Picture (cartoon, rainbow, N blue to C red):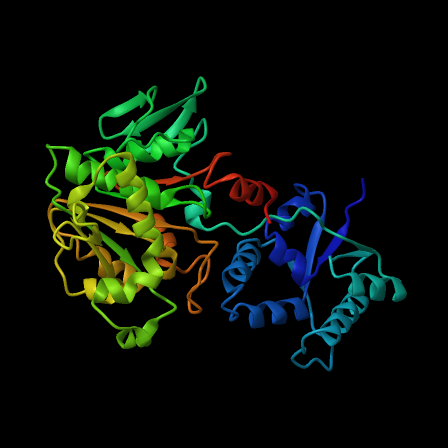
Length: 398
């Protein structure tokens, strides 16, 4: 079969940086990239919304010495967005010495223009969405892969935990503060959070899979039910992106200032209190005062924790994807002796305008701590979640 000359458009490289190897098909075909595509990638890598995805495409090009690049047109200037850039791509293809070049693009207008210019064109539909490190590493390793400390592997239909005490099958279901896991992944999250040899656990999932609920149940169990732990208090730390500098104008103490943003935490605590009384979390249950007892449970914004030294406590960091790398480091270095830390979040829901799916606190934690013997990570999956509406939304990928 004759070798083909594929010319890649910008959108194809961004949608799936692996398209280079797929289209080359071993050594069968040749891959070419126009000068204008490089210029467009250079501009897009500065876009905070998609810069992390563009970076993957650039890395794929840098790491592949077999890709060739079409030179710019003789009168080339920096391309402007839109149709002018498309026209220059077609001009660079027409001016090249390639034999029967085939343009690969999913831009329909560019496909039509290529047909008018007599340039063969095809679409590329094998799109692979970007995944952050916290999404790619699910807490499981595949057959043939070396185990990572505190990971799981499926063996004979059962999850095998490669923990501090060696590999063992997880054949039981935890019940924590009378919370029964709804999926095997929730059960394994409990396994990690309750293990005495693991100090820090990160949990990635979309909304609705129960990360905060599970973490609160585990924290209540460790602080109030278990007698063999050093934990005496629960801290919940949350970045409040929406308030910023305006937080000081809200009336009341810290809890009252935070109330609009942590109402869901109090609702979850009341739900857990209904399952099993958690009187010490609240100030006076008998008097109907369900305000949090600061001696036992404290909710703190990130700015307040930086100057603290946390000891003998369970610390829950919620929505960690909205922390920067420096903020995550500053927070985690506050953890002293006798601390268990749960880092929760979803890198697909970054609200901080200065962060993205790759450059955020949760992803940096997974990227840098993976492999340490007192750290573990898991991605929650499964059918059942918050409720039937959430279920169909997650399953439909809305």
